[in-house]
Image (cartoon, rainbow, N blue to C red; front, side):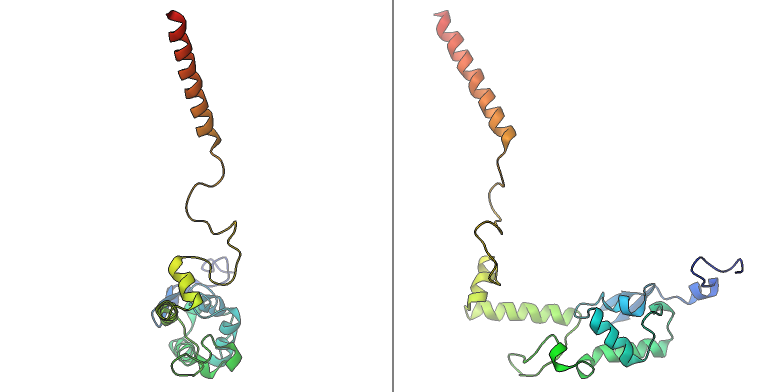
Length: 182
């Protein structure tokens, strides 16, 4: 081990080549993490999907993302952009789209936008889920008798009750002292 080597075994030259941020779509990914772990920071890509992306791109999933060559990063970007062709149909996150009927896998800010549109459509047609979204109540059948309360106090405020009792006792003593003086 030479003096130029760091603790993890990489040299100072490797640190110069490291990209700290790798941009895919509209998302900045951490270049210091492994490829698989860094891909999971994107919305719509979990651990299993990230592993499929690295296998389809032909890249070692444990390699540091920021140290990859440009063509390797481009292959990862290409696989992420065409993800629905690399995933089985049961694994895509948008099966049987309402308008097109196609199954696609959406990632990044497109996923958030599509989710907002779906909720808005449910609210406009006054479906059960849409009404629950409008009211701000739980949508997926959870119990609401004791959980999900957003207004009012939670529990008993013991300190306030003791202060009120002390004020009432002081007022009673003053009234009693004022009545004895007459």
